[in-house]
Amino acid sequence: MNTLFKINGLELLLNRFPVSNDANLQAWDASDEYVLSHVNDLALQSANILLINDTFGALACALHAHNLYWQSDSYIGRSACQKNLEDNQLTPNINYLNSLEQPTNALDLVLIKLPKSTAMLAHQLQQLRQVINKDTIVIGFAKAKDVHNSGIKLFEKFIGETTTSLAKKKSRLIFASVNNEQTSSDENAQLVQWPLAKHNFTITNYAGVFANTQLDIGAQLMLENIPTDLDDAFVIDLGCGNGVLGLSVAALNEDAKIRFTDESFMAIASAKLNAQNNFEQQSRFEFDWHDCLSDYDYDQADLIICNPPFHQLKAVTDHIAWQMFNDAYRTLKHGGKLRIVGNRHLGYHIKLQRIFDNCTTIDSNGKFVILEATKY
Image: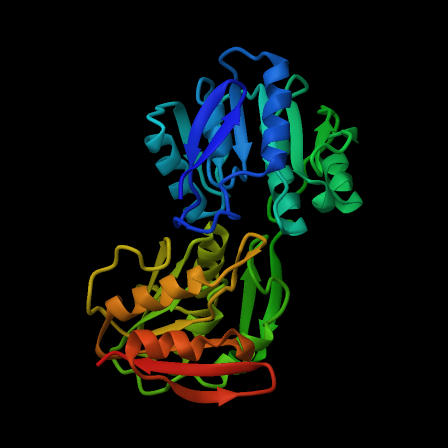
């Protein structure tokens, strides 16, 4: 549902992506308003601005008159930004960057919305250190409850002397003065490695990827229930994260072909790295930074495996699971199966029964359940 966002004399119709009819879920928050008001006071003219973690493109729309670099880990976020610019008939000079790309021009201003993950913040600030100079204005922003000493210390470590604003509408700004003598760390410092004993894999994660330092409990149960009868099958690891589920399918089914898909660029980069590090034959694997299976063709996959999220950013929601299950139904061949793991209390069996008209419990423990539905 489009919502009117009034800021700095502009009126913008903005929407979340995927579109939500929940009036409580809007495409900006008070911290976006706070930082945009502050930038307006700076009175910059045709500045080169880097926007990091601009969730649904509210900042890009409000600052469209400048030269923009727009960086996000989220495919959904990029899609939302593009759609909101289009809906407001705005055509800025904008360059979209993924989480491992950097601007090529000198920057006048950097606005970084604090990510959920401290590891991701460290990665982003470490990258930023390499492309800013003493004249670059660096401003972080977030809801006040999300501005912690640990984050401020990261700004001080990678950028320079750091202060914070007074709270306004429960939001704060972070001001970091660029110190040219500050040194940037190893660009791979945020890579995390840990062993997956079941298959003798070494798992490597980029910053911010789910289950960053160890196998999560739901995935552990899923690994105990990977099918082993998938000769020549085409399997999709939907919402793949670091790829442990799809890689386990590959380890137990030597002729299966696996496509890894996730809306997080760092997740896809992690899955690709893990495939390269743990398998010799790479032609079995495909990698797709994507919004679920939103424009996949009908009747492709023999099996889809999924550990669906039950939140978007910090909002608890089931719309992503609904989209994943509906997309899976469309993409599966007749006779193909969707196998998922989820918290028991989420009631995914009800959704699967409604979409597939069948649902079987494969395994469960006190907290998680493995469910399977077949497309007939």
